[in-house]
Length: 247
Image (cartoon, rainbow, N blue to C red; front, side):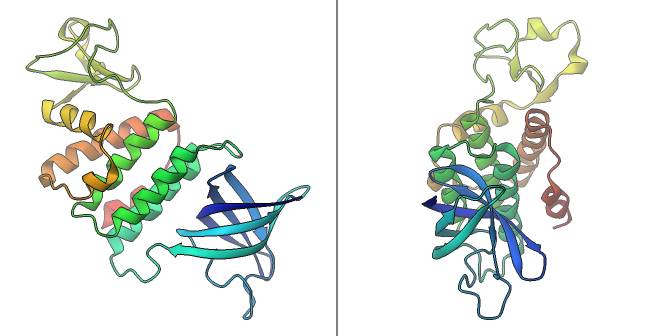
């Protein structure tokens, strides 16, 4: 059986003498793995369509053990000529997040379009780290891990004004003063600025966030809580995080 779908290359691995096994996040079928035969030969018909971060139309044959890519047509090659290492590394990191947080063959068109958006807007983003971190929160929202940011994650009391705000990762959100009174060691103290920022991130399009600029110390604070929350709910280690720390 043949099927046709738009997809973005999340990962590409060399296989045997001339083949590649690629991981695609597709518009219609979610994440799939497929093999492209002879792609590493000089006269390969695939060209650069199987490079990471490439958006293309794929014609795929449903195989018994693994699907086989028979044709591809490039729509856009994100970062194919980019010399901005930070933006490229952030794009790869976002692709890794989608790869590790999505299950095979579970279609999610909202996630597909969100991935396409981040790759598009990251190229011109004024604050690329802010945009990539915002993408991660929006991915978590799409897969069902949106944090509680208006009500206490323990007693459900509405939180409006508190001098100190405490966040508990394993409970999935902020907590009121009464619930944190017994043992504050299990909570992370966060600024009201960051909670307000995450609230806005979860309801604002990436196109608007791409034009925003915030102070470096706020980026660092946002990065710390984002990585902690993402690591807990994904139970994954992201290899590209270490590379980003070195930049």
